[in-house]
Image (cartoon, rainbow over all chains, first blue to last red; front, side, top):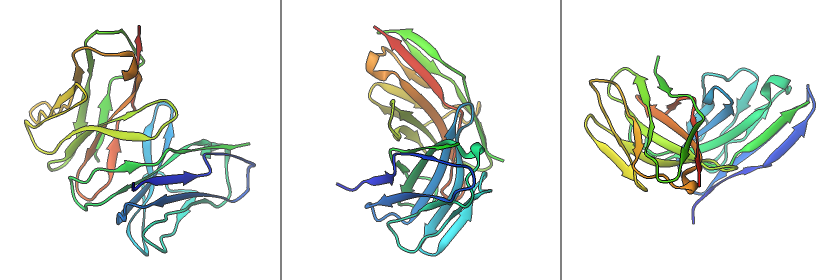
Length: 114
Length: 111
């Protein structure tokens, strides 16, 4: 069965370190997204991609970067982790460009920055 | 810009009670509307959706009707079960393929 996976599921790191969160989907979807989930804020979009070599900033992109070298993967990098980036991160993918495409979510990565 | 407002929780109910979670939105154009559910320790999964005015989405006993005149998409279930305890997110998708989420509503159903 097709799926979307994230790794690691839990990560503890220190302020200033570079961290990369992995997202891998086997749906062969063109669209991929990264969100962060914080109490009181729901889910907020960090970065998204509509295909290989395409990346776009979301509403909370500062301090994060992504790259899309193939269809299956969209790794999220925190260049220099900050305590404000402690959060739960979700990756999602979808097939259809337009208003009707359902997004499929991964299980999430809980990141703690000390 | 686009925005979604949903009632704050937590909402605590007894089993077999009626559940309503209010959701209103602001968007340009004609968005599609979604309800996602997040069970403890899991990612979000689509519960139901509606793509145009007056459409009713339904799944697992939950229903929501796309009301353009009131810009609302309220979620309802007639008789909740303990297994419905989760966080529920209302979301919209306008132009492009990005979702805008509400803040989420935690629902706790007690036996």
